Length: 319
Image 1 (cartoon, rainbow, N blue to C red):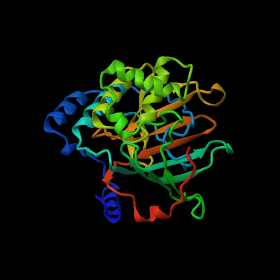
Image 2: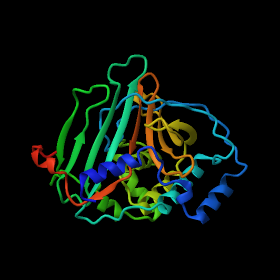
Image 3: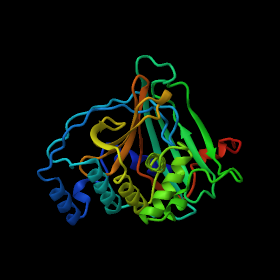
Image 4: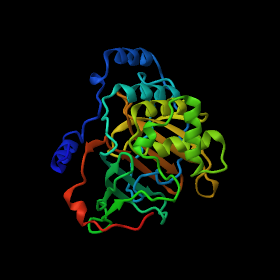
């Protein structure tokens, strides 16, 4: 799909529809989910708090997200680990684009944040960033940081995404992720290495969890995404709860608690899934007395070229 108008129309067409819907999944998988969820009841856990940390690879400015915690109904999975196992099935069951290395993944990053108790360092915002990501990183990409709804006259900028030579590996490209192993122990080490860049010196489980969240901040090939969910299902300290995604849609969340918030405060970081299809909707970071962030990444579309207006965007210094 090369035409920007087609991309926009396609995004708008599916903007209010979960993808994929359960009825589009394979009949065998639907039967498996029905059996797994029959006569299961979730026992609610105490609600904790989450650290407000920008999700890796996501736009930094965000706006007010609403959180709802409820008892999951009787058809819900029995545990957080089961949610992640069902998400692994969904990752490989849904249709997914197969990009060439010379193409772009075109998607949106949407985030909201707001403070609690008037904390000044958390600015209430709703932000949408439109991204054209080079599949293998060999081509200059593009990021359009759209005006925040709360600041309609400011905060907009456009920048070229330039892969810098000689400054470390940086975030893995989609082509890099496609080559990551699906062997659980090898992939676990990869995720822990990624997490070590953010929370160096913590235990293996915490570094792995941060690696999981970092990688899932952008498009991930289905086989690797499924394996990542299966690894996350084995981590200690994960809980299940209901949270709303950035659009306000109720989802089922897997949350992990740590003490890596400001000043060592307890924090909660969540992955949010569709309650029917178990497709990843996004996530939430929440820290008590500070604020919360809710984020999502839309399903990518493929394009061969950048929009024509990108030619007017000035080249930024390598970062």
